[in-house]
Length: 465
Figure 1 (cartoon, rainbow, N blue to C red):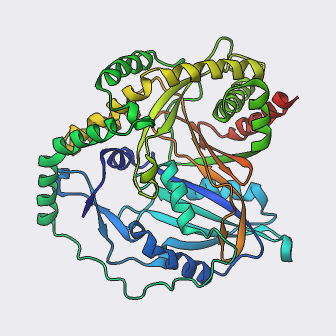
Figure 2: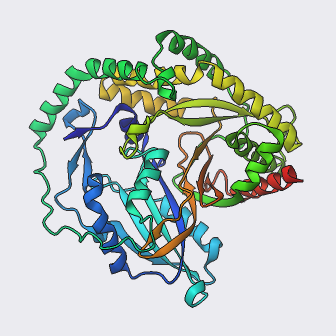
Figure 3: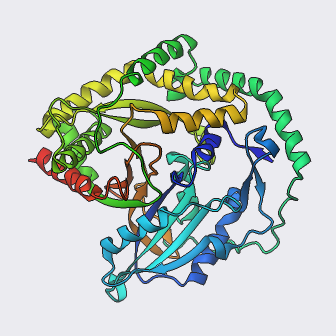
């Protein structure tokens, strides 16, 4: 049994009949689609390298400890790798609708927490111009953005012809599922070791200079940063249609811009690629609010921006290792160049502040709490907070092509969940010279997220001009 860390467990605790805490992506591939049997064999050949894909989550009796990963004795590849087809004329419109439907359904907590969907009918062009899609869905308790990218690099090929493929193991034998008594004892032992584990985490953080987690190891900076984070989060966000009750159904939109174009803007006007990305998202939200005829004068929009704490030697580990920054997007500014200057100044200030360390201290505190208390705290924060209006996550992806059975993935768009009172979230993934945006909305509270996606591409056109 392997115990989930406190952040992994919080993503399970947050989930209910409305808040579905899975992340995902959809990749578009060139060439004719493989058969479902071929895709299942392909995925099965990768499973020895990803043991987590054959494991499920078990919760101890009375939830006395954090959940654990155990082998699923009933694992079946055909349950997790499925197929569907888009109605004519297919294309991105059909794919967007499918993403909304598939992501509106929770993963079965009694099985390994992932699904792959082979999507046919995306493009009706024959022969070499054919296109098909692969939709992936995995619970957030298993991976964060960086780990998800690492996982994709394992599950797909990095060469068109990778050579002899490892045959799917027919001899895999799952470990025996633990009894409730053994699971309870394991959880009790974990409770006794929680303070030691938490202290070990802090010591390890302090010994990792030069990374985001390194700054989180300084207790004084954590305390100062925690005070500043608490002060910022004490100010409630203005009432708007961007926040409020959500339902279980999702809608999804996409946008794509050239990474070279973004770098041209950065070279001309300064800042970082991430500064330009946040500028585009700010313009997208402004466009959405103006279209909804909501006031934007002097308005800012607070977004949670996850920041990776993953050290270089921790790539490939399937878990969550992030802290957070809270950024106020200046949607009250009309000129994208003014927005870029404001975003750049704010991000420069945040990089030299202690807020990332303070947020890390806040998240790390759950390590020392009993599992039931940590779960209650996570649910309370998500459902009762009134200060964060959206989430924005930017994950770097590979700039080399990835393949499935010799078919090259030409585009890939991410999916980020929304939960609590947040109705809109934006994820960005870079791949093969493109920045791919996935915009998630609550179907009832934000059915017009395509307006936000359009505002992103329009803003880049303006900045290039």
